[in-house]
Amino acid sequence: MVGYLYRLQSGRERRLPGWIWNWLPLRAEPVTVHGLHLLGVGLPPGGSIRGLDRGAKVLQKKGCARVLAAPELRCIGLTDILRARGLSLVDPLPLCRAKAPELALALVEKLPLRRRCVALRGENAGDAWAAAAALCPQVGNLLLDFERGEEGLARRLREVYGAAALHLDQGPKPQASVEFSPRDKEVGKTLRLWGKPGLAGVEITAGGVDDLPLLALLWETGRLSLENITVQWDE
Image 1 (cartoon, one colour):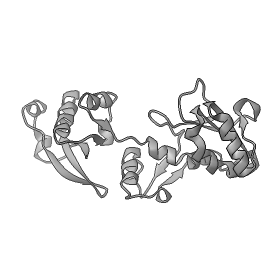
Image 2: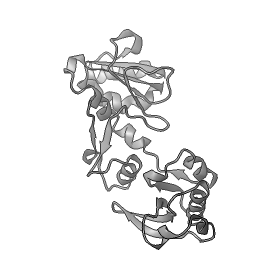
Image 3: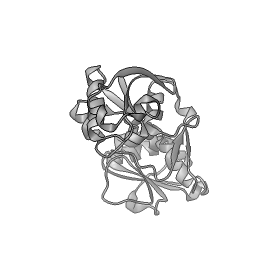
Image 4: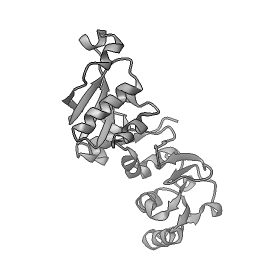
């Protein structure tokens, strides 16, 4: 079950002094967010660490395992607060990785195909096969930089596409790179697809929604297909 933490914005609750909320119970109620049926807990305006913890506690007791938090509640300490209650935030990383080829192409799409150079990087080349297969016919040079499995990925690309994927140091300087795990330095415009995703200014949107965790949940539950989720970058 997925819970939803959000900020109350209007009505009687907004006029109550902040200290009163320390004594009033928080309620979990069914809410609908872009067609998703979630169990929501509304938090008082103003907010506090204690309020977030109280909301997390309510969702924990109701059996929630993951939480979609409204953007205004995503403070630095929210992940730790939820973890202490055995909860986790909805993770947008799987969606970002599924869109990795489109994200990378958005950074080089204005260049002629032959001049496009993209690097795929990380610890395990197995993480990059889907992205490599999609990018290979659409870039002039595909460079690899992996600690494990790089030779196998290069061989597979050569067998399937007849393309020579070079090691990062053997090819031209890439305009963009995709990191599947932390690297010691960035190369070109870098898409960070590990931990908290960093998309180098590229946006993922669908139907006017650009909030990554919400889009990830809509995709995960089948309410959006990958084809209906678009990638755009305004240089």
